[in-house]
Amino acid sequence: MSYHVEPPAGTHVQLSDVPLGDWYPFFMQWQVPVFVSAVYTVLSFYFSPESSKLSRVEAKRQNASSDGSTTKKKVLTPMTMLVVVHNTVLAIYSAWAFRGVFPLFVNNMIKKGFFEGMCDTDGTVWNSALFVHLYLFYLSKYYELLDTVIIILKGRKASILQIYHHAGVILVMYTSNYFTSPCSVFVVWENAGVHTIMYSYYALTALGFNPPGKQYLTSLQIFQFFDVPLGDWYPFFMQWQVPVFVSAVYTVLSFYFSPESSKLSRVEAKRQNASSDGSITKKKVLTPMTMLVVVHNTVLAIYSAWAFRGVFPLFVNNMIKKGFSEGMCDTDGTVWNSALFVHLYLFYLSKYYELLDTVIIILKGRKASILQIYHHAGVILVTYITNYYSSGSGLFLVWENTGVHTIMYSYYALTALGFNPPGKRYLTSLQIFQFLFGLTVIVVYFVIPGCQTQNQNKGQWILTAWEVKVIRRVHEYGESLDMPLYELVCISRSGLTQKSLEGLLRKSAETVLDRGGAIRGFVNMGRDQPLPYRMKRHMEYHTRGTYWLMHYYTNPKTSELLKNQLKVDTRVVRCNVVKMTDRLKYMINISDAV
Image: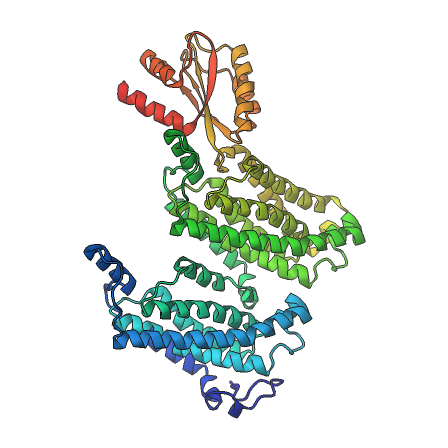
């Protein structure tokens, strides 16, 4: 194998003019990064202590709480000076690299656009400036190994994530240099930008300052892992084993770690607290979990808005130029262009990131619904098929899904911040709309003559089956769409007649739907008799097919206690719509009394 002992053709740079340029042939041998990464990993695990000392910040907080003082004079020990100098050097270098590469990135995006700026088919992106910055960026990853050395010298345990990151990034940057990857312009500017902030923060904290924004550092680091240069991973993600394996593992782990019972959602808990103490609003505490939810939903909302803005004009333009039939079938292959390729590929990758939805739900102690698990696992397979067969239907699917997700994730981000935006009841309708729209698009493929003969439609039967099953799940598990749940509690001395029940059902169903919720069950405090099948179907009809549980309580004492709780006159036939959580509290009180 030949090595790049000279700069790539077209860079027009002399190694003698590049800092550490004489070492370029040495560092471009694959044995160097492999050996260094392997030795670093082994030594890190070997010298890392079993238990970790407290960090300086945590120790300072404990001392402050124990002696009542808030600040102490900072002692500049040799270790502190090493930390300050190390982080300052990396902060200055990162700022210099960002200042040099970011203008190259912006200039390429303006001149060439996103697709050509990333692919660099004419070889003009990889110029002398990018060569110098990427080579020095690669070398800086060797110097960053000192991060782990400092942690171990301070008596703290190096995390597996940190060791894995530092060892892996050396190999990644070697590969980018060796293959002169044009995507590197994306990698350098965003990593250098994040590192400028991160190492500046660490240097200031080592000096005894307490700069704000610590909670955002992790979010910034996560952001850089999900950056645009995932184009290098296209061959990997387009292997069918990847989406199948990820979907299967995600499904198994979701069911395994999802709790049996679910905690109240934050919104529902807030409503109960407001009703119990008479307050309307409380000061919002931005916990780490809240910040994770806000950042996660904000990232998806921004991405969805960007994707919608990019794809919707393509959709409208194709409909005007080609008409509905040709714009959907794409028999001449002009719909699937470079812009749609980029958007659909990133759309496919975003479905992996959206798996974090379920992780957040489980971390909050709530049970992940079957519908959610089924949806996230299935949509990865669907978008993979659409990419693999270069399906023109992707143009339709992306714009309507990203449009709905822009609204949905914006709503979730605002509610996580403590706001109460209107229109929650319409979110479920929007989600059902996109399922029906997608199903319509797929079915039309088999109706329009000529569409079904295209190679791109080989996977459409799979998409159709998936859409039908999702809609069925929406119908059967309507209560799992994060809607407030209510029960219809009816009390009478002689039970309910069919005529009375039908009239009450209409009113109660209207009440529930006006509140944006779904009726979860029915409690009859009358005679112990099963409801006729026709009445049960009538109940399902008037509550839009939500799932029902039938409860009967005939104990007179229980009936009397529940009557007192609900303030219902049992001399008349009457039903109350009660929140599920409230009904559970009533049942607890009743069981204690009985």
